[in-house]
Image (cartoon, one colour):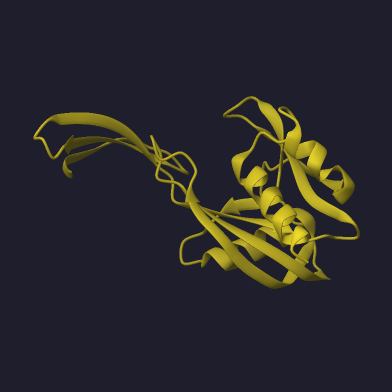
Length: 176
């Protein structure tokens, strides 16, 4: 498999859309539109006063508010760990003293190159919330006693990184 041609269709502030012409090993040639976005970092917060920290925010791409673990784009020159720490302070107002990378995955590799870095964070000190311009979110404390209910529900957690993060927390909790 090899890329024969890469043509930029359009570029926005956060992403670029390309047309890729690909030659398969059997010499067939096909085209695909690909969204280039870069990376994001997210952190599942270990129990924080008996709760898991989630944020609720409106996502225009799906036209609804979603419950998610704190997350955000990795800035140019920033390490994924630095982005996760920055996002926890910006969105929630806490600074983790211990952060561990638990997974890396592509969020939707059928059409996008976005790579997600998932972290587990604990041992916090107080920081200050400072949301990005236009960011409208609220913090939701999910009692640990309700995590199973949220994971079993088909409507409470609809974000893949959050689902994966909560499953990781559950496995870790079960191994203590």
